[in-house]
Amino acid sequence: MSRAAQRVDTNSPVPPYEQIRAQLAAPISTGRLAEGELLPTVWQLTPDLGPATGTVARAYREPEAASLIRTRRGAGSRVAPLPAGIHRPHRDELAAPARRLAAEARALGANDTEVEAAIGEALRG
Image 1: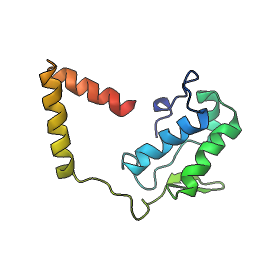
Image 2: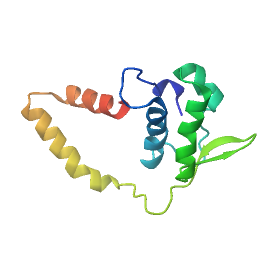
Image 3: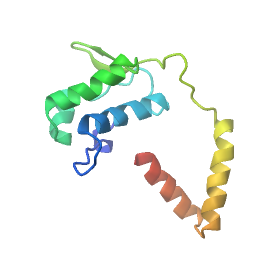
Image 4: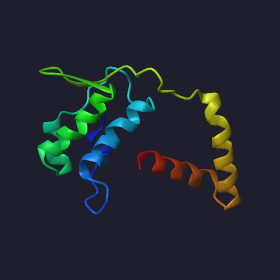
């Protein structure tokens, strides 16, 4: 998991631990992070993100409680197998909403490059 992709917006009304938790949970539950992938340690993230170590640790506890990650002392935190009930959409299921988005963006006058850039920003967002 890229530490550069994680950030804390100090101007946001969302508490820092929740911002970090969401940035951990979202790519796991959507399958962007593969089962078994090693996550950065709390100690690695703390200086990069700014909040106290306890804040970052709290952000890790909630995805662990939801069985999205597994932490073992000395082995770090890794992405757990997705729990039953979490549905990862098949490519065919994504085609219709993607076509609607493309049509709406073109109706606004956007070209393909602009649509792709906007989607990229939204995915990183």
